[in-house]
Amino acid sequence: MANDVNIEQCGWSNSAGGAQNGFRNRIRVYKDGCFNKMTGQQYGRHNLSDVDQEGAGNYGAAYQSGNHNIAGIGQFGSNHTTILTQDGNGNITAAALVAARTMVA
Image (cartoon, rainbow, N blue to C red; front, top):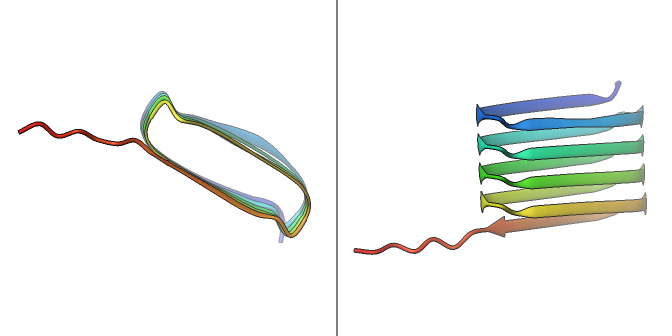
């Protein structure tokens, strides 16, 4: 199996990009909102990056060098920045950022 990228974007002015070099690397992106950005770079084999963004003005980046690494980013709200870097083999990293909401009755 070759490298694989799946991007689903709803909203406007969202962007996603990156680079893959190796074998069976996968990048998964889901965006719902506006002005969200994501970049992913994978070098090696069997790496997975999954980035989910809902809201506005979020930035997520996953950089992987090695084999069998998994990186997950969840950003819900606005103006979050997450950068995950993995070097080596068998790393698993996840980050979730959620903005608190205040309700006034």
